[in-house]
Length: 155
Image (cartoon, rainbow, N blue to C red; front, side):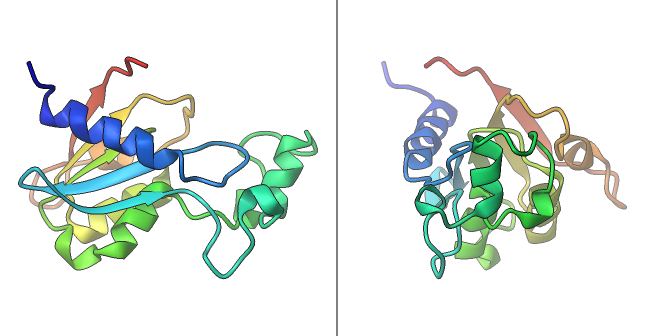
């Protein structure tokens, strides 16, 4: 018996998260349309910088060393989120697509999701309480909101 498409793509996102160089948290994202992958992304520093695990993001280094707490000085973080990287790869193809992500989108990623017209987000419930789910749940001017589905993490 084969796994569902949602399970397949969330497992793919989990595999992609292993490419992340972030020393704080690893996320992966997959954008699909008609059950075909159109884009993937993982979190990390822009390609012009050293990887996070090589010292490319001083904010993440400070977080690991306990100099700052989770959620502090986010404006100093150089890492790009997995969702943003996946959207940036093929933003014009994201209209009516589904995004699979290994954590709940933050508020900035939620804005990107809305801006490119993604219609469905499948995510693994995360540890961050301050996230963009409330924005994605907000009805737009036409009375619609993004379809959100929390998928249970089995591994």
